[in-house]
Length: 148
Image (cartoon, rainbow, N blue to C red):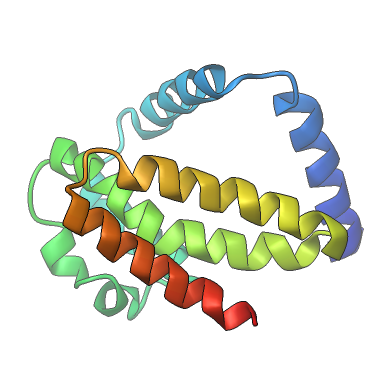
């Protein structure tokens, strides 16, 4: 099976598996899966591998890209889990989007991008002051201006 066939199969499986789920069901499933997946693991052992995955490269040197592995490995597993959302958003999500959008048909990329950007705007601006919202808006406008 070549890479294109694997991607098509994975896409079909993901749509079949998650297609009928609403956002809350997906959140609950992810929370349950994350707990089970990390149960019994020593997060200090996992961090180099995770940092490598998040940076899109090998574990070696990945720590420097994300703030230093030794710095990240300090603290308890609970502290590592509290850092997970920020690490995922800064490293894993952009890497994932960078891999997945080019694999989509060009006519479907716009819909996916709008969905992603809508979530960024809605959830990213929640609880921000007016100045923070303006700063977010200006940053997004700068990026969107690159399309022209």
